[in-house]
Amino acid sequence: MPINNDEYPIAISINTILDQYDEYDDLSIHFGEKASELKIKLYFEERNKKIEIFFDFIYGFRVLGEDDLMEFWKDYKTKDVGWILEIKKNGWYDLECKRNGFLPKTYSTMPYKEFMITSDDLCINVFAAKKPEVFYID
Image (cartoon, rainbow, N blue to C red; front, top):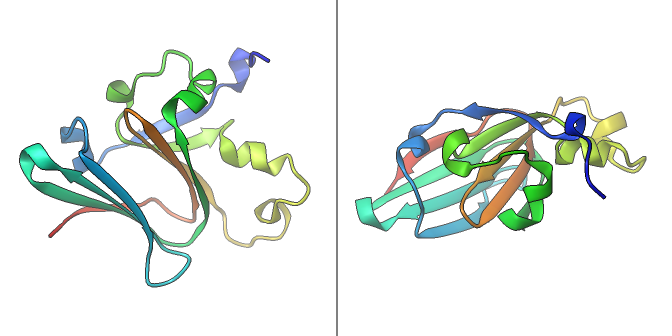
């Protein structure tokens, strides 16, 4: 079923050190010291750099192939929007809020936001209380 133009996600790009890189060679996802922490590590072999995207106070995340989400993005191009987006409207969070059983909708005292890490093959959506930290690691 095609979606209405008014239903496309509204997102803003979050500028980070990742914006100077094109494609990663390796990606890994880990929980942090606490289950509410998420670490996404990217390795860029050409420049021999490792970068971590760190989320604190997450509620959930999903990983899907980029092709699985193309129907939601009008004129979408990864290179034009950056690596990390904050989804303001019509994203996965809003979709989950349509379900009665989605607890952050009714019971959470923490205002969760949705973020999406884009790449040429994967998209990682994260519900978190605040923007991620992005930094170089050894």
